[in-house]
Image (cartoon, rainbow, N blue to C red; front, side):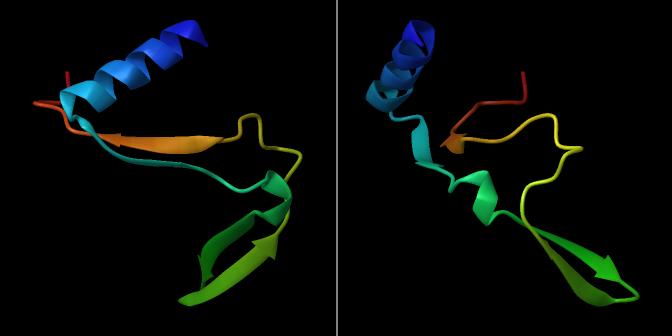
Length: 65
């Protein structure tokens, strides 16, 4: 967590952190898929999910590397 905090601080102070937010709990998750061109919604967390996203950060980068 220390390295994460340091990275976030560096991104903020350099002006490269554009946005970020934590995501809601996985119990409120909804999966949207297309079924014959129509949206199909499925509620809830799923057993096959091995990872969960806790949030996101949008940062400015000079390139993909």
